[in-house]
Each structure stands twice: as C-alpha cells, then as structure tokens.
Image (tube, rainbow, N blue to C red):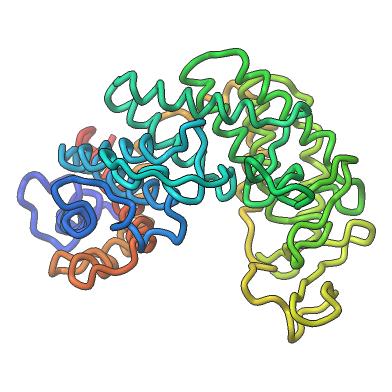
Amino acid sequence: MKLLTLAAILLVGDGAHSQATDTPTLAREALVAAVDALAARDMPDGVADIDRMTQANLYETERPPVYAAIFSAAYDATGEERFLQGFLAVADLCVAMKQPEGGYSRVAFRKRVDAQETQTGRMTFRNSRSFKAQRVVLQAFDYTGDERYLRSALETAEFTLSAQHPDGAWHSDYPAPPRSYLELPMLNDRVTISSVRELMLVYRHSSDPRYLEAVERTGQWLIDHQLEEPTPGWAQHYDFDYRPAWGRRFEPPCACGARSADVIDVLIDIHLLTGDPRYLQPIPAALAWLDRARTGPNEWARFYEVKTGRPLYAAIECEPWVRYERDEGLYPGYAQWGSLPFETRLARWERLQEIGRLALIAEESAPMSLQQARELVEAEEEYVREVCAPDGSLGSWPTQQGNVRQLVGHVDRVARYLKAVRLLQETGGG
C-alpha cells in the first residue's frame, strides 16, 4: 500500500481531511444509513416479519438469513447495539419459523415471532435452508450465551440426524413423494453437503459424539460415491445402487462440476475435524478432472457424460433432451455452465499438503493479521469509493432502496473493509 494512503487511514481519528482519510468515514456513514433504511422499511419497531422480506428471496424460509447477514456484518463493523438487536430479532424469527418436528419447510411455520397462525408443508434440506437458519441461531447463541438459541439448534439437529440415511446421505424432502427423485440421495441444491455442515457446526457447539459419527458416515458415503474415470467427481442424484440418477427432466444422470467442487471442500473439512486421512483420498483425482474439464478459461459445464467426460446440455420442451452442444432449445431457467471456485479449492488443498492439518486449522481460524488488513484495505478502497457515495448512500440504499440481495454483498465487503481499517488504527499499522 502507498505510505500516504496508509498514513491517512491511520489519522482518521485525528481529523485528517485528505480524500484517503475520508474513505473510512464515508464507508461507515453509508453502511449505517443503508442498514438503518432497511430496518425502517422491512423491520419497523424491530419486528421481523416474513411477509415484509419478499425482496430477499422467493421462498419464505430463505429470507431471514439474508437479513441476519446484513445486521451481523453491520454490528461487527460498527459495534452499534441496534444492529445486534436487529440480528437477534431475525434469529428469533428463525427459531419461530421452523416446523414442530425441528426442520424447515419452504414456507414458514410462523411468519412473526408472536404469530398464532401456522403453515405446514414438507420439510426440505434444499438450498441449505436448515443449515442457513442454524448458522443464524447458533451465531445468536455465540453473541448472547442465551441457552434458548442452543436448545433450538439442538432440536433442529435432532431432526437432521434422524433424517440421515443409514449410509450417510440425505434426500431432499420429508416426507418425499413416493417414487420421485426427491427421495433419492442428493447432492443437488447442496442437500447432503449443507446437512453434514449443519451437523459439523452443531458438534462444535455441543461435542455430542452422535453428530461426529454422522459426519463420518457422510464422509464415507462421499468416498463410496465418487465416480470412476474419466469423470472422478460426483453426481447430483444417486439411485440406491450407487449409480447417478435422473432428477428433473433437465437433470440427467451425469457427473456434476459444481457439486464436485462442493464435495472437495467438505471432504477437507471432515478431515480437519476428524484427523482421518481417508477423506482426502478422492481429492487429487477430482481436482485433476475439474482442471481438464474446463469449457473456458474459468468456465465449466454443469453436466458431464460419465462414460466419455463430454459436457452435456439439457433441453426441456424439444428433443433431444440431452445434447453435446450449446444450441437453441436448451432449458433457459437453469445454470448449465458457469464459473466454479476451482482455484480456491486447489489452493486450499495445496496449502493443506504444504503445512499439514493442525497448521491449516490454526491458519484458517486465526484473526486477521496486520498484513492481511493492509492488503484488504488497498484492494478494496477503490470499490468502497465507488459504492459509497458522498451523499451517504451505499449502492442504491437508502436513496432508492434496491434489492436486498444486492445490499448484502455491499454490506459484507464494506464491513470487512471497516474492520481492517479499525485493526490498523488500533495497532498503529504494525
């Protein structure tokens, strides 16, 4: 970082007035104004209501975690008590909206904490619904130490544990319609991935060995269901004979690039948790396959033919349903190609090989270092200037009050920038 810029940042509290000095102040004012506007619009009087969160997501139970992420980032960056209270109101809603059995449906059981009306529906693990809600509830426990949050999380974990297949996977919906793909072991929509992550999170808060045993079962299931060459990744759905299976009409039985990247990361996490090296065995072949399966510089197909490794693309209204080329007639409502976090997965794997399990655990759990803070401030300062306007707005908030899903990304980045600035201020820059 240029010395002038760093020095100016460190002088924020002493009244420096250069453009660089004003950036943290501008960022804080914009973040506070945006989150205050969101709270005033969608949580008047501090009440979290599913019906006021429609811009966050189509599905009711996926909405509160978006708001929770905004409030927690704002609180961590500023220390403002009202943001903590906003987060806790959302956490209380996450507790209230779960089904009596402990799981989560697409619709909320209660749309407000004190509501009397209820909704019933199949509970589902799709789109990480249960895991995202659990993260909010357990974060509330971490903030407050209030045992009711931990009790709620354990109730959900008991349902998640009871829903696990004996061999370690999960299917999508409970109860699942008979003879449908929703009763098949599933990696699609992160069903099994998010479920095992949920149990890992709860295990860290409870040390209950049953959760660790369930995690190990999932790890073995992932080992057993790795596909053979030339596509040694994982499928979206499996039948009960370990073979890739059809999902919906546009989801053929294929190797899946996106889900394979997810599995690589969770296998590393299971190894870090257990210390068992067998969970690492599938990773080198899977990484090598993803590296050669690129369809562009940073692009992969969603589907690959198991026997040939060729990318496949799906139609839905015209035949053939499955094709080797991207042409007219492909189903447009589905991401059939795109980028993957491959370089991140590869770098993490290589770092594990370089420094070992215990050192990687320590490295990944360590607080931000001064060098990391300097690098983050330097990398993000231009973005912060672009997104935080002189009128005190953050993106389109509060002036236009745009989409909440766009706001959460801005708040997260600006909050991380502010925390890095604060570290440099508190330490004098090292």
